[in-house]
Image (cartoon, rainbow, N blue to C red; front, side):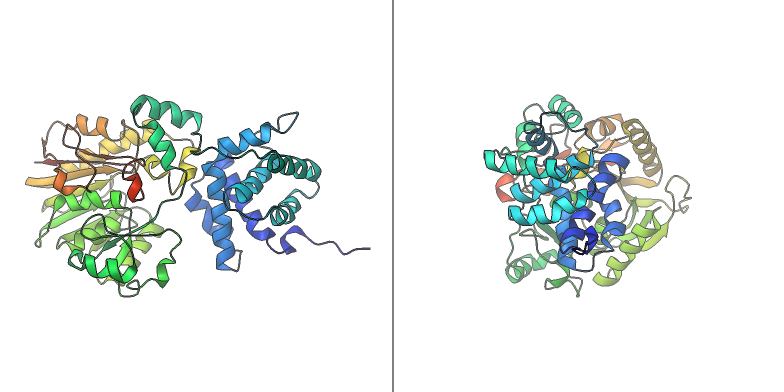
Length: 420
């Protein structure tokens, strides 16, 4: 008798099995992909196999509606939405149509995931799709809920937003010393859209790049760097960074000369913040605490930055899972207002407050900013933003993934600033 092998013993299968577990965590449990990934990928020894598993899962989630349309166009009876065969086919088609892997390799590593299941069906559907010449559209089809929300919010931008989701974004770095922008742009072979910013092609191995060990920079999307930039040089003044981890804005503020008090309730994320401070040689007072329970010192702060918990839908280029997870909007909006009130109470007279969310939802951005009445609005200027993006009529910062498309795009973000 031929010796049988467990699926996980077949070369290449563990990565596909991990990808299957990742999309199951997102679609069935509603877990964030970056939360589900570490325990799932830990069992895979090779780093390139871990990267492949994550890439397969991300592309399957990015193109989910379109992959399902190809599957449904080939089967006589529709597979249930949560059928394992459908999930495996999504992964197989994503590998062939998005990652360019050879069909024979996709079949050899995909069908073992269906041991005891409809392998013949999956093989037939996969082969039929490829033989038909059917492919994916130029832009991913947005999930129904996101399409409805964004069409209502951004009717003139919806097509460019969808087009921007077709590819994962490039790698953005924020420099510890913006005066060295030209030096690091040349040394890393990147481009720069603002002082202190470097953009590299995606796929760069971060820890292998020059300057990583010396703490010359950290990874941070260009949009995410704007809120801290709005506060300007610190000159030794005191700033409170609420919901601070994993720490990109804390590092920016410290590098800009602020005395930073950074607070976050996640011990795991605070650990990453502390590691980044050590790597960059920057200093901040780091506190692990729930902001709503924390008792601030009697001395008020010169500025407060609130990067509030939100739906994170603005990060959908790099985190396509946010398009498929349930979002508790009412709960988030209530927390955001509580944080705004908490932040306003921690600022001295003449101090400034910046509120930011990485969200494409107006109720988390524009509506929250309009709700603030007790502080004086400080209009954001065009000089504070990347070339090609202007402040809104209200003096706020609003970006979406379709902006700066020719330069590689930008995350969706909102920020507003006030003075007490």
